[in-house]
Image (cartoon, rainbow, N blue to C red; front, side, top):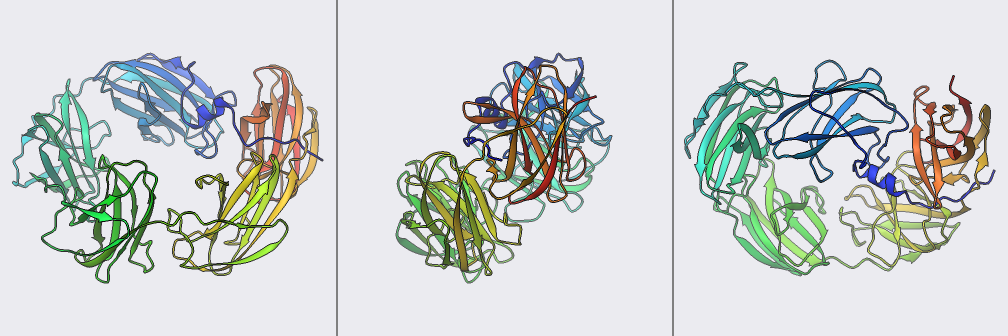
Length: 610
């Protein structure tokens, strides 16, 4: 049957859900409350791109220093808890199985500031929820911990973590040490142990609570020991905690506080130049605790740079830092040889960027060459005709992307709503396809690695969001692969029109490569169904040919808004979705495959839930 065209957009509500932003209608959860809830199709869910899960958000009013404990128990799904700050979408703390009773969660968090926080009760993954119990309590003040032991610069302290030591919010035992610092003073903290995986933490005590300002698990030089360079933000007393990464870690350790090495001397590096250098024992030590040379990139905002680091002596490593000192890109083995590095990056502003040159592995010193050039502009793509197989070859002379993959570029003109299919095959390498708007900086709209389902060949299906020129990048998946390939572009025409189904009926259909294409490139058939408010439906989809995935939603402003979905609710490959609409109306059921390229027969049944 023919089916209607759906533009490749999502509603504002779906975007909010996929970004992890809570609805303004979140219920308030008081400290001491015991909430009985259910995660079902009426609750928001994140998108597939974000890793799907279903959730409910609760606002929590808390004051600085409060020690909160949230417990979530669920028998039908793996419970997961997160807490978010008054603003922002990054979780401050999270827990999966912290209760130690299977799949139940317990999240402990000490509130740093007065405000309204968001507690998210969710599934660990997937949209299959169920009943749950959520409790929120305030933990009592911890028993007074022993006064931290004073630690002096360059005086290593041997210690032992035992089960009699105090424990932090993560239930890991710790020993505490104190030192005083001037504003801006830099320190280096190292924590070594042969008995457990050590973590060094530094912070301040505020209102009786430890407020962490920095931490390190594994030093850049390798191994499990910790190394942290800390810059004191203001004068006063600071606390160091020696602790394991896992709660059960106990044993002997050595903690050392030292003056941090001075910042690396930064040399200018002009685009188009090549520098011969050497990592030597006289070089500075970076904030990761290893010898490094540093170079300032002299370039402008928007320039795309390519840096190559080669050495016959050591395994080369490049890292790029922005003006704030944050690492923005790094590469280990992207160069022409297995141990050389190549880093490609588009500068975001005119502030100076710094390249650090260092080594990894056993040999950490020796000679090297560093070259920096302005990466070639994106090549003019070759026109790729429809319905023709084109032969090509990836070579070292081809342009490379920001992941150091050489690629060939092709262009075509498409019509809004039409479906295109691109197939790339190679016997020499694992293929990779991307598609972007033409006439703009390349930004992948969709990509595919092994969608053909025949090993390492690719098949990318996409419904075009607008009329105009598009650019295809055909490349290996890995940065070091080269060789021959073939590519074929097919126009499948507009999306088929929506069919219809009535409650109590079963539709038997077949997914083919001429069916409609979802945003993720999978095929689907669409059915319209009339549902009354409060009418509870059970939708099942069975297929012996592919992994079935059923989705229900509504069409709004020529876009499909997903309201509920299920993958394996009936069995490992068959779907079952129980759903109740908020209002009466016409809804769309998509009978689709879970992954790209899956085809075959299916049966879709829509019935009232008993």
